[in-house]
Length: 350
Image (tube, rainbow, N blue to C red; front, side, top):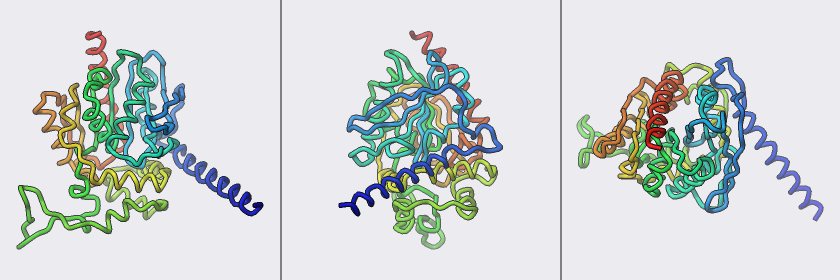
């Protein structure tokens, strides 16, 4: 009994140390001031999901300000948005949350899927927006997938809760067969030096090894080799040292089990047509050098929004997958313009 109690205490201590280490990775400081933890006033908002998971939700800036909601991507956290929180919290109420299992949010009893993504966002919006209040909703990568899942599951909430939407470096689904992250393991089949296609789509070599690497619940190491690989395969060659180290710290702070479970869920997630339910002005931004979710994925979303008449703009920037980090000034300028127009429209409509 004594031995069992000692083991329990040791496990708890190790878990606390691991959590503290992950938090330390998210709270580092850099020479690039925009990447540093925000100094703006912060409120912690308690949110519990439909299945009982407690989410970490923060609100920065004036309580009566117009709202921007920032939704992070796979293996990230609230802190991923530091460049945007620092840029907008002086005049906007900036809402950020850790998606389930990420950062300090609980994973909950239900495995991640498009329904949990949608339900969790709905819960966050219910807790942070006043009745009738509409926000600019911004989703990066899995965050953009979250917005599409939410719109598909709760189409009636889109006009009630959103003044405008921004989809950054994201996808409408079928990531397993369309990512270029590891081209040596997932490249088009060729015959006589020509790609083999079926119904116009490239046929790809099964990437069992690549998927195992992405979904395995193992810690991500640090150091310059991993940083160099992150820059080479996920970011663009113009990314600065600070930007690369910042991004690596954020991703390494994610629980390995969360990283694996969400990678497995996202690989086959199908959101075909969900973007059609984004019935507010929607801006789509892709990275010309994005290998994780290549530009052609964003183009498919833009085509859907063009057909429905809700595409506000489509941009392809010379970045990799982390557009709001690699081109923070440009992204912030674009978001400022979108937010100003959206909230003027909301005020006129109200």
